[in-house]
Length: 136
Image (cartoon, rainbow, N blue to C red; front, side, top):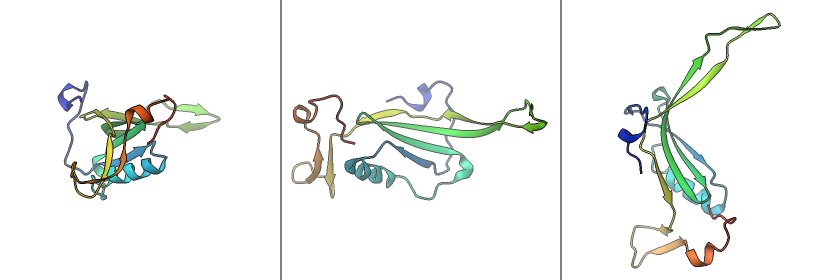
């Protein structure tokens, strides 16, 4: 976990509702977890705030980042066959916080560790036999 203050060159988040970018949730369990994480955020993104929350699944770890994006046109005009092309660049500024999660279990219904019904449990000794198999 890295708080917003400790992210280098961080910006200040506004009160706009961010867009949500889910990446790498391809399996059946991944779709379920992606829909679960998507339900945490409101579905009416305010695009004028230009904020995006990215949840990226890589090797069964969930990397969460919060950015602001801006589109910037280059001031250099390049002449290609008597045409003037302005190239547009997308730039990102991290707002923070940044953190990484690992899914241990997925429980159906309300949170109850004693009598709850588990949809999926990560069993280390049985499931981590190879470094090439991933579940999300």
